[in-house]
Image 1 (cartoon, rainbow, N blue to C red):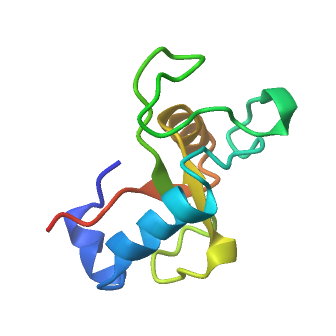
Image 2: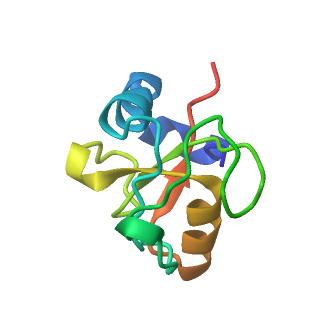
Length: 105
């Protein structure tokens, strides 16, 4: 989900690097959702892998980075979660966390 233009100023200048580190290095390119979205995942963690076919939706996965406390200025690792589109969309319905993608360059 793109960052809303009116919120762009709330993200640090190095957001793209922070987001990539969370999604690709820490999460290993796999969704980190363990039920934040309200779904039950086999093995406890969502099996969706970045740029692979999602096992449930059949679409190509694009990982995003979620702020668990809805505060874009808070980029502590414990506040960030790599999430696939399905977990992102399901969780937006429950409004538990705000998911964003990279800042447009």
